[in-house]
Image 1 (cartoon, rainbow, N blue to C red):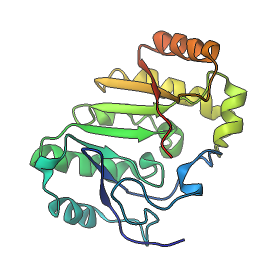
Image 2 (spheres, rainbow, N blue to C red):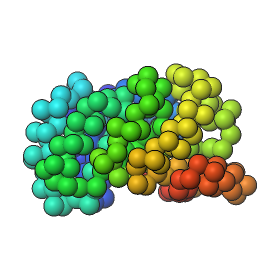
Image 3 (spheres, one colour):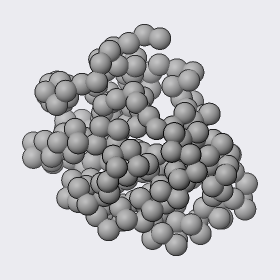
Image 4 (tube, one colour):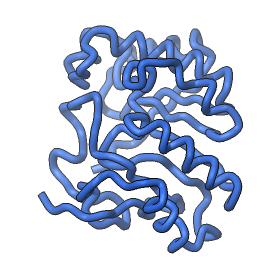
Length: 204
């Protein structure tokens, strides 16, 4: 495992922010099991968790006009460092006024021991939450959360409540991994929660 301090990196036309390698899950399909890099990055395994000052320094090295969106996503769950995430999001809005997305497993409330959704209001434009499957037992088998059986339903509650504060909340599954019937069940879950369902392509 090679380590670096790759905090900011480009994927397509977006700037991704890598805050931590910690995660509440050990997903069987996680990309970091088989690769060290994503997009135009160095190794996303961090030498240490960056400070606010280090994140700002990484941002200041970028030409922000090149990017459509800033995305909190790296080799870890971004809400493991939610307080820093929100501080950085405020800095981005004040200095660059870019749309901000969080790619998350949706377990942020469990991780932080509080409901974090209200703190995103006015800062986070999109939440992309990994649904993976419509079945709670199958979800637990796939993501292997440290929170056990609470994780699936906490994720759904998080999505529902986040929609009150974040303009775009999306639950995602990966194409070719579910049957058409399972995808229909996922769509029904999203309709019930009042959020968007998206089937995204597998990234290898």
